[in-house]
Image (cartoon, rainbow, N blue to C red):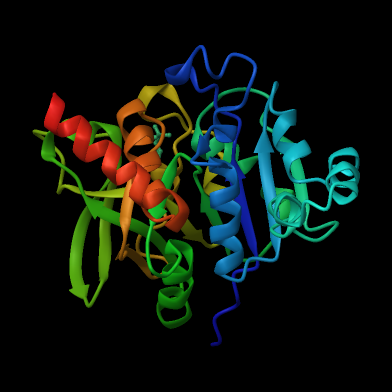
Length: 293
Ligand code: G1P
């Protein structure tokens, strides 16, 4: 049986971002910039690099800045054209998905990640799809989702991106009970959402990248509550173990938790050091700062 291509990606962006208040009082947390690009744009560009053609945002109240970001900005474009600011013009729109390639739906209640994904069921339909959490930013040679779609083309089924975390942090993640390993793929024998370190089946944790089969929607439909009394995507996936192939992919690259202040700051430094025009300046500042403190 041939494995169908992953054409659609879901971006759950309904979360409140309370950890970044007051910055996120009137601005979606997904619009926080790492260097000069909002987190959500990194996620969309990563999806495009993996061949995604349709971009589905599950939004909420106060998130309209995201819709404006993925739209033309005629006034600004005209002004930049008049002033011959070609570089700035390119920064405005080269990365925009084509008209009609972006769709929005709302998560009307904050009932958890599983519920957010379920809200996209009619837009996804009956085909495999990706889920990207913009808080998780990955710096890598090959886009993290592209690594996953390449692995999926061979293995099919469900695939989650995984990495080892310190045992004391297992209660922040979906944790794998790992089975056999084949190269960078680990068979998923079990999954637990945010287990305490003493009972976690491993330290291999899901970061916010998934390739999923549409069958997950029937499980989510049941609305069963899990950790934190929320409808958890991890639980819906755990219920599917044994039906389809299911793997964790140890991806190449460094993941930054941009839902956390320290992780967000680290991401800014790491991504700035990747930029030729900023590298020397930022590096000199870091060296100086380290020597003087
Ligand atoms: C969500 C998932 C969790 C996953 C994490 C990755 O948790 O529920 O399984 O490990 O994203 O960032 P959240 O960070 O939304 O609490």
